[in-house]
Each structure stands twice: as structure tokens, then as C-alpha cells.
Image 1 (cartoon, rainbow, N blue to C red):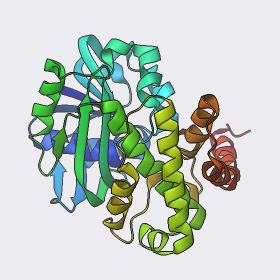
Image 2: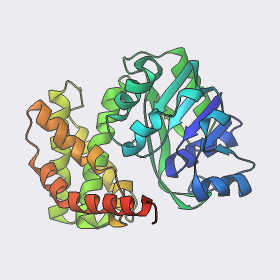
Image 3: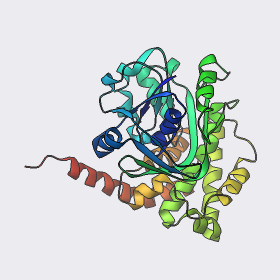
Image 4: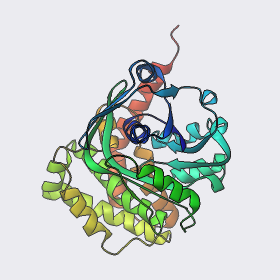
Length: 318
């Protein structure tokens, strides 16, 4: 298959790199120093599943130079999805599918509003990975996994084709859930609480899960996500919180979430698409989520300051 990876950071760089390593045709959409490094010296990945490099790398900032592809993996941050969706037109042919790999539960709808719902599949990934330098990705934890599915259910030929390509990737497990919507919400009830409690406590997972107070916050936040999901008609399993807490207990002690890292390092984050999304969706559904409201109120000033600083950096000099 021919893939375009929009956003070549920790997620897009890793899974796009594995696809290229497996012999698939992959074009990365990137910019700035990262794009320059990819073109000059290729993509380098440090991974618990085995280090690897891809040379040469097909990479561009302008998607018009890439042309029509079979699949677009959208791997930008959740707050960048709407803008990215407006640029995808030159990549889309009659049969092109678009798969979002964001943390959260709204990216597919954001994409569908621009490119059409018939093109968009549900997708999620599990990995701890990040960009450490231009052209350099570090996979620091969690066995890599990708899940894809038709948003209306069923197993289609295009989903099976994606599964076949992804299964060629070294060390990547691939699943087609019975209901991709449930799978997305069950990931959401992990990532939103872990990200917010981690950012609020400024502690890695090992500390956060061990302290009685922060562990209680985690569990309360997870139960709030389940409550919102069920009011919205999502059939989350009865033991989802217990299974998720066991998963948290198995993570590397020094693990941190990307939203947590962004907030603590003064960068714009996915706060409004994780904690903020829980608050927003809960309000629309008539569900009270006091833990998420508190966490959002604690973290929102840092988010606002990061966005002000981004605006200052982006402003033209006089």
C-alpha cells in the first residue's frame, strides 16, 4: 500500500518508519528542522523492539508533491487535526481511507466533517514514543499496538488490507475490534485520567499509582469517563476500570503521557481534547464529573500560558 503519514513525531515517525522498514511505500508530511533531517539523513528510531533506521526517506511539507495515496495516517496532536484535515485534499483519491491516531474520541468526527465520513476509519494506537531530536524518535515503553475498524462496525476489505500491511511491521500487534468506538473510549478512560493526574502531580506513573491520594484521583477520573460513555450509548465493559488500573500498574515506573510532558515543558497540549473533552461531553450529557472539572481548572492556566507564548513566538518581528 501507499501511505502518507501526516505528523512524523513520536507516533507517526514510529509507525510510519516500521511500515517503510516492512517495504510499504511511505511518505511523511513534516516541516522545519525535522523535515530537513529526514531528507538529509533519514529516520532513526530507538526502540525496545529493536533500533532501526530508514534511508532514504520520502518527506515533504507540501502534500501536493506526494499525490494520491491508499491510506492517510493522521498523527498530529488532537488540537491540530482540524487544520490538518483542510490540507489532505491532494492525497485523496476515490478509495483513499483516512485513519486518525489521536488521544481522545473526537478526531474521527473532526476529520469526517472535512473529508467525508465514508473515508474515515476509527483508529487508535498504544505506545510511549516521542521526538528527541530532528529525525530521531525514541520508543520508550509499551509494546506497540494498532487497532482499526469501520466506525459503523463490520470487517471490510479496506480494514483487512490495512491489517495486512500493519502486520508486516516488526514488533507491532494489530487488532480489529468488534466495536472500534468502544475500543476508543476504553483507551480514553486510560489516557485522559493518566495524563491529567500526571500533569497535576508532576509525577511519573510509578509515583502517581503508588500514592493513595493520586491513585484515588485516577480511579475516580476513570469512573467518570465510563459514566459519560454509557450515557452516550457506548457499551464499555463492566470491568473496564479494574482492567485499566491493572494496565497502569504494569507500565514502566518512569512513564509519562504526552499531554503531561507538553504541559510540564510549557508547550500547547491536548488538554482540551482529553480532560476538557470529558468536561464538555459530560455537560452535554447531563453527567457530573467533579474530578475532571477540578483537574481541568488546575491545568488550564498552564495551557493558556503555553498558547500565549506560542502566539508571541509566531508573531512577526517589527
